[in-house]
Length: 140
Image (cartoon, rainbow, N blue to C red; front, side):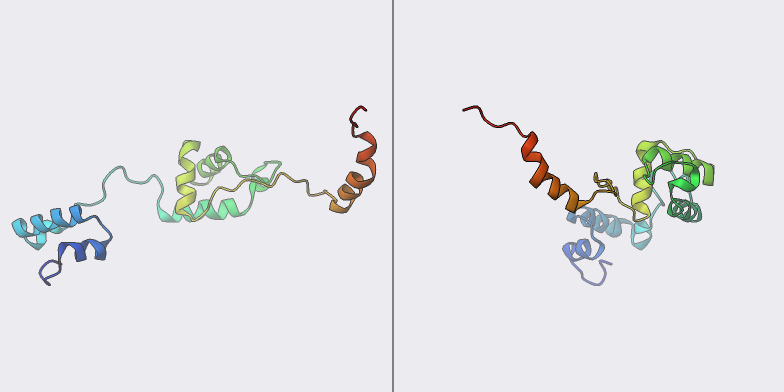
């Protein structure tokens, strides 16, 4: 890494880290050599679910909420948490489910607040012809 005469800035750009991190790596490398730069493993708690479980969750979500007894086609974080528990036997707090969805490439979307049955032509006709009869007029 540094032995190819690359600057700390070049190393930082190559690995997408800050210059401070590259500087720290440089000093570790100078002191301990290449072995000092070996990773110590993942930091933090290990994930509750492995990749194959995540795939099962995605397959389950693609079936839709109705498949799991819900009356609407709306996935909520609470509903998804219940499906995860049912499919993978892993319990997640609904507030953390959005992270899993992000890992799957899913995003939060709000449903449109427009009825499917809405007839745009009928609405325009009503506004043009009937609404003026009900609309209050200013007093003279």
